[in-house]
Image (cartoon, rainbow, N blue to C red):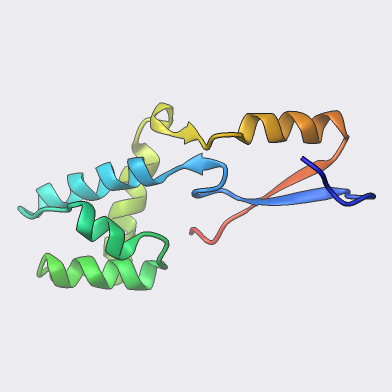
Length: 116
């Protein structure tokens, strides 16, 4: 990995860059769907992948015909996601090597995310 001379810090997004959160997210959405007697399939995931809370909460409330607010739907997801086993999360390919290289060159790392 070649970085510009005098690089002091590298910023990383978490979801889909450092961690594969999509597989766990999919399982959480499937679990929530079952609680409401509905389904969540790959087409649904494709429709909401990479979108903001306002979009995917609205999408699922409408799809599942729920009488829930977007805040309630978001809370359902994040409560279950955060209570899931973190052992289900996997590093994206190359993450470990990039971090080792940054450490070797005394370059700081910073995590940024658009997730709540």
